[in-house]
Image (spheres, rainbow, N blue to C red):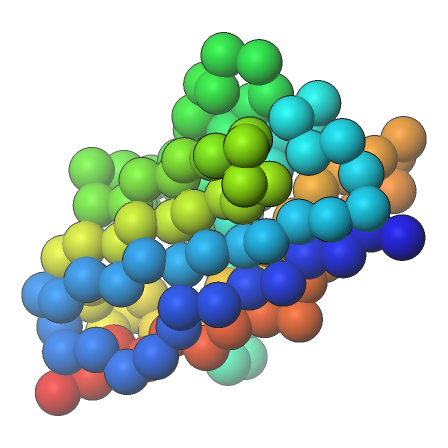
Length: 116
């Protein structure tokens, strides 16, 4: 079955960096778009970044453009989110996501806390 497992979250100071990873299994990873979402306390889950299959075209939320980079390694069935210049407002649980035949799949999430 489809499985997505995030890792790499933690506590970081403002201005710091983290790299999140999402290991995928149970489907042909290279054929599907992959996305990162985040959910902050009291807020709705929001799309952070997406990377397509094939050419790996990327798209970002305006709030993270220029600071976050999504990438994928199809040989490792893994998608990454490099987060630089982190701000307190980036604090959230970050989720990996894909859609297969119209059904959304989610990982369990990884907590990112940006605080001094």
